[in-house]
Image (cartoon, rainbow, N blue to C red):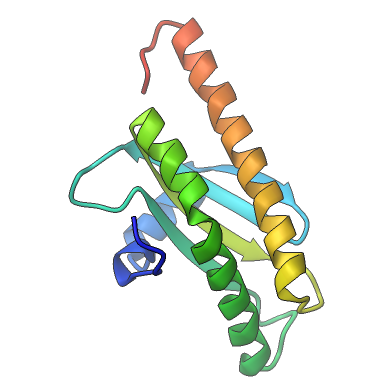
Length: 141
């Protein structure tokens, strides 16, 4: 796994976006709302894909929205190895939509700390869901 954020790791398909928001699970941890969807791992696709959203209603200037997205992308890029390792161990693929809900831009440390908290919550919720499926006899997925 490389440290870059390549194009294949970004979600840009309207169908995929609709599927994530329609069928996905969500968790909120300020300043992010995260909606994610899981699939069985596929060798041809990356283990983790991400979509970033910063609302125009809260940040009128495109410069501010782009700055926040740059901060989030960098945070994701530096911490994605945690999610990749989790996906490899559990043989799954994550599609994550991050919606930024704060009214202030923040700095890299703030984003990094919040993103690590989000990763912990996301993994905990996914593990809980996996346990429920196994207990009910549905199988791994």
